Amino acid sequence: MSGTYYRVNGALACPGCAEKMRTEIALDKHAAYVRALAYGIGAAVVGLIGYSLIAILLQGWVISYMSIGVGWLVGTAMMKGSNGVGGRRYQIAAAVLTYAAVSMAAIPIWIHFAGGRLQPMSLLDLGRLGRLAWLGLTSPFLELSGNPFWGAMGLLIHFFGIRIAWRIAEGRPFGIYGPFVDSPPLSR
Image 1: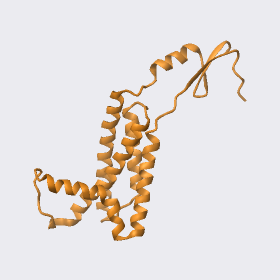
Image 2: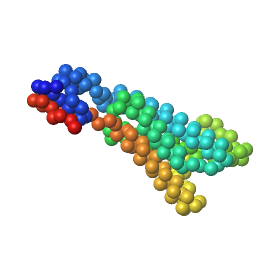
Image 3: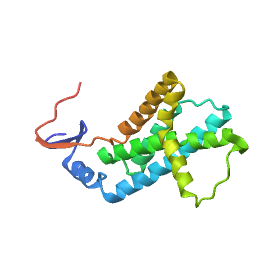
Image 4: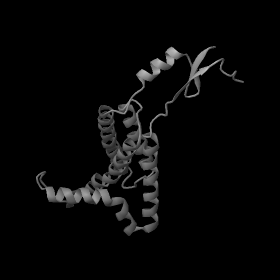
């Protein structure tokens, strides 16, 4: 390639290709964010169900490493929904969804192991539902009161799941540099 050229994420591109890439790159628009949220919420629900089912099948053993999988699932789904657009608001949403999915998984686990000891409640009993949701969201910290060592380990692994979602939701870097004139340097 000689004459005018561009660099796109380190690769050489002709002016026509660089212009085509500029027009086709995914932009951070409201629709992309809403799609990313919808995909992320769906992934968080799937992660919550999967986390709960595995814990129930293992007779109450909660494998906190599963939070890393939930974080990966949520972050990947959000990037799929946004066509690779990421950024701070995507990262915050992915972190919140990952935290909520893993924390709220405690509710179906508790309900399963409580057996018939729980009184049935109506969906209209918003007070009890609110308290149940609050218990679920605070469950990682409540574990500290039972066994501080394992509670702290659970929080740490919970953090790693959130960190995975945060990194994935950062998005793909994309840069078009140039135009440069002359022959590009030869690669070795």
